[in-house]
Length: 370
Image 1 (cartoon, rainbow, N blue to C red):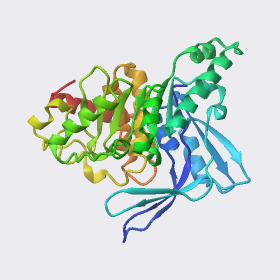
Image 2: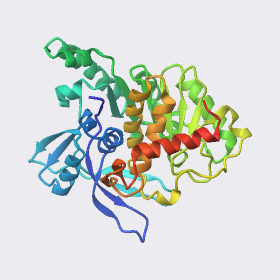
Image 3: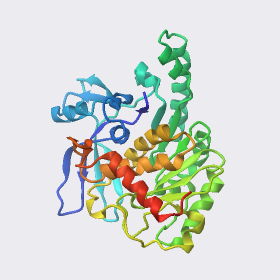
């Protein structure tokens, strides 16, 4: 298994500002979007190397199950006929902030939820509080170590003996200054820490407005003070792409695929105040319909990019994350899968590899390589 997420599957309601009407029965949840982000880079027959878990309540819509099955991932459907499927409400406020709340009881996942194949994954995506992150990593490692003693399958034994990559996405409710100490403790247990900018600032009790170029230096300094010695940080910046703070390396920003009014370039942020940020854009910001799930999908794509490019090539992994997110935000819910006689599998009418190559070409042409 290449990738497993312990994020949940949720059926969403999405509420917008008037006069736009809400969308209901939308596939959602951090686990689903992360799995789909990884799946974009694992077409069949490799699709089964993407693992996740869905609790299927008595109200589970048949069309959603059919869509999931069409992706051919290693999705474990756990039947829960005594309860509804987990549901939640996403409400977009006038300032663009997304308010989230569960509409019924949720079912958490842990090491005991994983099948043997999922337990032998090379990467894991965790979306949780710092303490739960620590507990999950310890639980997964302990179960892998115990299981390897009971195996006759040489391949499974080999995979269980490997040291997996843990990618931690913190949850907003626990990104507070009182949680900072526990967060720093959790960084000792993971390989990659990926909050969004709002979550990162909330942990430190600060505000960083990246509309002002001089504030990039503040972001860089805070990363060096808090995170650099402990783990690689990939801070998701939404419409601005992502910011990579890797120990021992210069920090870099990658633009979003559909970025507005900023250069399509990998920006060395030590020089950010000295260069133009208004070059022609990559992609079309007009294709951005709903950002829900973009950050989760980024981390799924990131994980596969890490496997394909090597554990030290965080920048290339982030490029994969950028492309995964770009497909997710082009509609409400999930992109449409198709098959082209000339390009193979396509999503929203485009080849994933084709978009990846185009993005890579454009940031390379712009220079400022890291």
